Image (cartoon, rainbow, N blue to C red; front, top):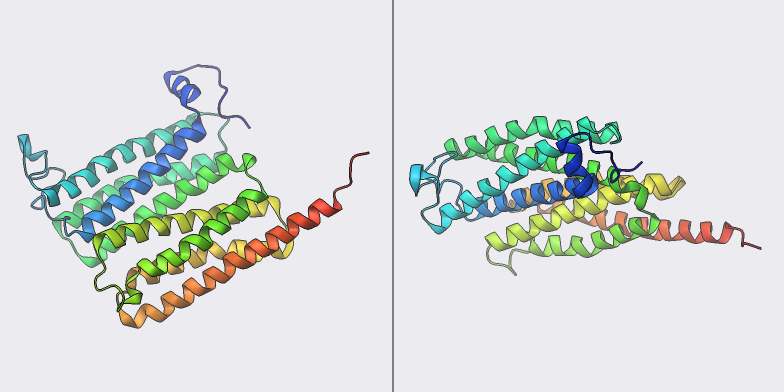
Length: 292
């Protein structure tokens, strides 16, 4: 299936011809990830209400459209990037829906992400006007859901070009990222006196890397491997969600143990996935007849 060679029949198709649908989708995914991380930064620095509870305006400039202080800049910049992410989400979804050679599964995922975007915008407004824990949590998890939808769609688009080597690479990336996630968490308490905004933003960045690694390994693994190799690969994504869920709560001492258990289980899963995937690749190479 080709995404890069189209007969220009519309302005939309002409743009996709120049950019390439997979690259457009990848750029949109990056914007969604950036929006999430900037939202974490705004929350961690206490900047969510810095625009004086104005939305979508801020607290300075003509019609209060600009930020008046560094804290309000964090919130304003989060909204600014989110606006472009929203446009990219809509553009990607419409392109996928209108282009006949885009996988219908991809189109469905992107349209669902587009439908959730206004909901996410409304939740973003409520975090400013009400700022309750429940609304903040719903705002965050909706963002993660949109990110996951676009991540799965992006993997589907690039899947024909990905191999078992990419599965092993994704698992290795997960093994490297997971200890960083634990080190950056408040679980280590005595060694890090405060859960700083920089630590929070970095940890959530690592979380998105973990989620990406797990989903790539699971989706491409299903295409490239069979049998017991798939067990750890398919177990990795839900375990990452568990790490994310308990990691968000790990500042509560009662939830430190579930977080560490989930992280340990995920590490074992990543290691087992690499061992089994490498073994399957070695077996396949052995069984492949040599050319005469």
